[in-house]
Length: 98
Image (cartoon, rainbow, N blue to C red):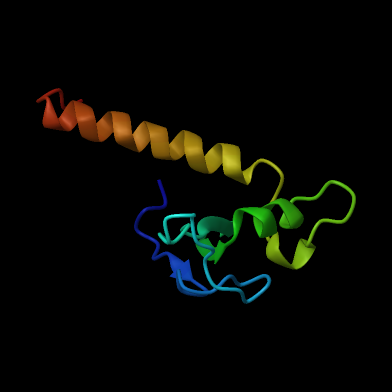
């Protein structure tokens, strides 16, 4: 996998990169964490966004294309490689080295 490549974070967990708002709060006052959105998978470029803002990024009628800098199948490739790495690491921990 491309785990050797460093991950770039464009913002911190305390402000949404889309609307610049702070994390919302649950009724009990606890923060609702912003979620990670991949702008790019290869290399990994991640921004923290509200769930609602993430939906706006991927809106079928008017996507926020400035926040989508990857090819159609990159996410599938990325998560398949991540799963392969997880399995390989698990096998290594269990002493099943190929």
